[in-house]
Length: 83
Image 1: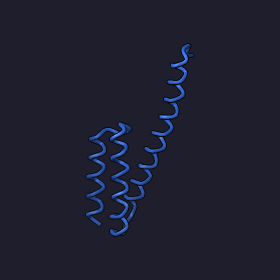
Image 2: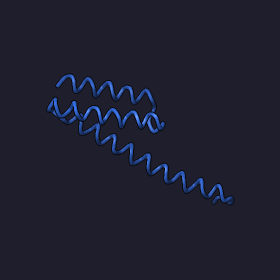
Image 3: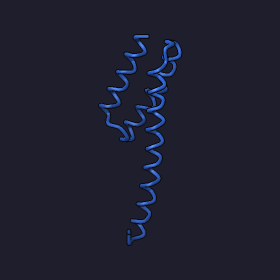
């Protein structure tokens, strides 16, 4: 257990950040899954912009690696183009 006041605060803030990151990551994964299962091109194109935005935000906040974000965006763009 932490002995210092600042260490106790760090534990609290780390837990808050962990839960926020987990929520954002899960939301993005669900959006990606939903986009991959979409068969209509018009709907997929409109969803693509929001999904790319979510993935970019995850990469910017270091929740996922930048290269992984680029791979995801490329894969999703190819999927939408093939519809």
